[in-house]
Amino acid sequence: MSTILVNTLTGTSTAGSIVVTGEGNSTTTNLQQGLAKAWVRFNGGGTAAINDSFNIGSLTDNGTGLYTFAFSSNMGNVNFCGTATAKEVDSTAVNNNGTAAMLHGYLATAVEYVCFSPDGNVQDPVLANMEINGDLA
Image (cartoon, rainbow, N blue to C red):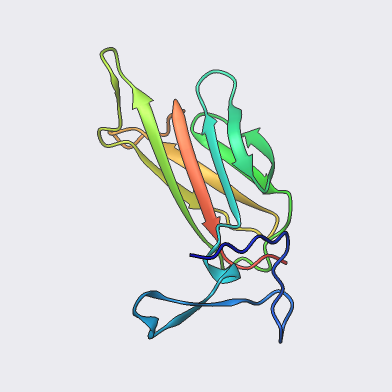
């Protein structure tokens, strides 16, 4: 087996475009299209704080269960895709029984995150995650 060690990969026809052959050798995927463009892990209880992130410039706490995340590097447009998760804490254990999270307010510069309790009211998540995929500007 050979090992290739490099610091930079550059496409031959387009510098920022590298095509990778997929499983089964029958399809190809653009490598950059498949990479997460931003992600964050944060807690929203008490003083909201980012635990770790990539391409997230700041977190704004807009009230119970409502947050805005500004991107360090903007998205190319508002047509990106995101996922959100959340966990709540009850008196006995960490769980996510019916806790829901969603993204809305898509802007090229930021995205809004909302967390809901099992009864449908907004609530602060104890542990939350978000991932963004799409094209950077």
